[in-house]
Image 1 (tube, rainbow, N blue to C red):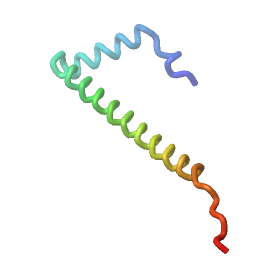
Image 2 (image 1 turned 120 degrees about the horizontal axis):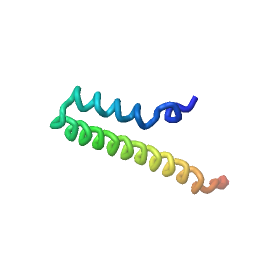
Image 3 (image 1 turned 135 degrees about the horizontal axis):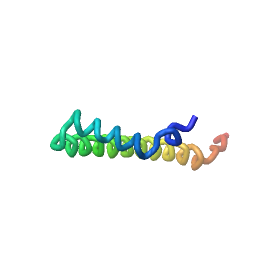
Length: 70
């Protein structure tokens, strides 16, 4: 099911008008700023987890098998 295929230009305009009426012109920039900060924190967390996974996998692949000391 393609959700974005169902939503057209006129529907987006109606949604934007409803948001404008509900929150007002002064509150929208604050909401977008908060949303931007949230997206930035989310991307930062995802990158951090990816780096940690890469470090763990590189650490296990770089380990050489140890020979017995007998």
